[in-house]
Length: 79
Image (cartoon, rainbow, N blue to C red; front, side):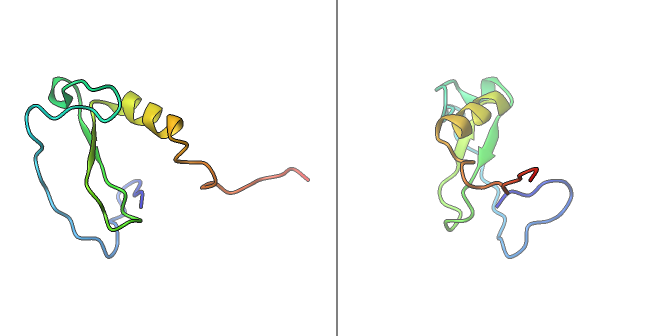
């Protein structure tokens, strides 16, 4: 589930856990706290273990390389 803006996610428990200081980026392997870290969970599958990324660029590259948006968008045709 991706929540954008100020809308609160529904039916989802919120837990705050601070990762280890040596936690590394799931994409590039850099230490996340040397940058601007982001935590991501897949909440369509029971909110599994979080993945940590050192910045939005690594998150974006990870999404693209793993084809995580394929088939998730509406199709539009000008016809």
